[in-house]
Image (cartoon, rainbow, N blue to C red; front, side, top):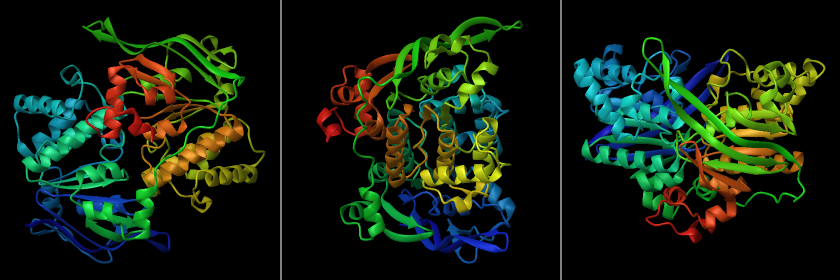
Length: 541
């Protein structure tokens, strides 16, 4: 079969002051038409850098190629003109980026962003482009797409933003699709839909798919061939079935064995209540007409009641757009809500923003998108130090630096990198920086909004162990929002299953996982396990 993409002896280096960082070292990779090739490895292994090289999107001349050739359908990418690259990008080669919010224009509507791709390469009329946009949004499972065409990116959940990116990437039916963690922000049911869609498109369009992921379950289901990367090198490559059956390299064996395991530590029956919420509602008004009259409401959170205790983890699961993140923000008074919210006996709804400030130290959040929640102009040290300064922790610069060092070590990052900037880290490393920023203040409660979604499997397991250890040591209360049910099972004591802003099932995590009563919960379990019918014993093993 003809090779669609052939990477030979590719190296990528970044200039860092007077030194040089070798991100990719002499790798070779081939993709044939209609073939799905997976590139796997831990965060920082060079996967995304290799993919960005194919589209010539690296920050040149900061990044350069000491060696290598990239041939796409007979065209040498390395010395192609910029005019030629503009013709290829978004048309014959498309990419789904890892962090959708940073890739979408915050000032352009959903319709305008997807239409732009169609107009640039296909010259479609506005009417034809409108019809194609609706078709694409239906393909990727965007709910209420026709009613939200004029909405801006920030008005969508993380999973919905990722679906918008996928719709843009497949708009022109490319010959090669590069998918960099395409399902990271998606819940398990939508993840299954998107993977099925990508598989169907690959077959229908005879399209090559380069799939970059840390989820080996996805690799097993999707890929024909697998390349394993570590520290910029390809350490092993093989047909998917052969690699999973008999991994040859110790690092591959380590990846296949890495998975969050165990369960949460027991919580004493007399553990103190940290936070309670009663009948919490977050309704967003729908305004129409010249005078913008309110004609209805989007009920993002609609009457949820919950309780959190010291050393206790409340898991919150549900599909993208179900209200999970909105609930977390409402509990911290980062979103206007109604209902009773009490933190250590104090009614938060009666406090002004000034009165809330002293409590902010004890109520921390780790956001879903790490890159957009950090200032690109501040170093890692300055980002983590900022909270210490605001709350008066650390008497001087040296004391604060020591606290930052300790926080970085706790999340498995080398403090030697603390003077670097967010763009110099991989997605998984950025998430660990965000966890360190929250931990450094020694809070009593943390809202963890998909904190492991950007992490590779082995680091997920480390992060779960870290969070469990910190919880036991400091009696932390966690509100853990995630679509990864294996991670939730390893951390949560109790579980809230949310759909359309309403709790559909609530109980101890063990009971819900073993015997889900609601059909919706059973569907979530089925998608997480990739099985045809729900079998509770399969997840309990």
